[in-house]
Image (cartoon, rainbow, N blue to C red; front, side):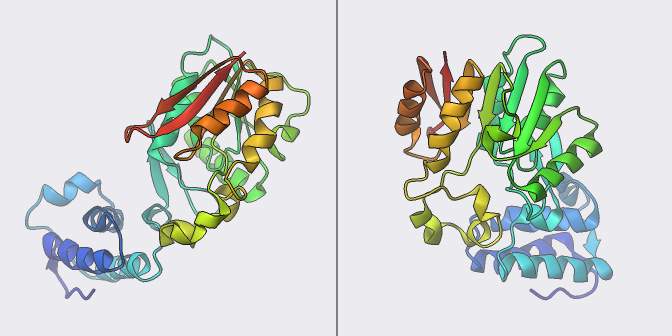
Length: 279
């Protein structure tokens, strides 16, 4: 992509969109708009409010560099701009932690109806998305968040400090981070992609997001097999995100762990995405 000095926003977006589309992105125009809004320091909608607006000077070079990283390196847009929206929050994100996805918001919704003062554990918190969204929307809850990855936990702590939200963080593998503790609900978006699916993932996911937050054995269920018995022993409500086609297997694991009432909830695409179990 080459942009001359003083180019109208529309032309800059068109040129960037062509380069990003050629790289295989499913959302080239959106990617181009998000990157340009970031460079200009405005909201995306502002790109279209002033038809005569131009991109010039250092902003052109900065935009070219970001578009090149998106098109050539396949770097995720969220990592390039350093933020990702989740529920009502704008979270800082970088390659230390998985980028939050919209479907994970279903886990937050599963906990919004908890009684006042309930104790909630978010296992594998990553950027802190689930725990911090709950702290934002239900400040009465006592929320703990864990992760085995110290780097990811650092991102979550940084987000909590920046947003001024009260969450207790602990490092460790699954519930080993909080030995003997009891909760009213355990939530988790664990790794669930089968190892054999690695090659088929989009390059921006496969090559840039932390593999420890993505892959979980031959069938993608390795973490659930360890997590669900621990969670069921610690709380009367367990809710986990699952991959496409995994809901039935995870429901069976919940029942085997003593959770008698189990249901799977679909995301907006109709995929059974969250499994909730209660004693």
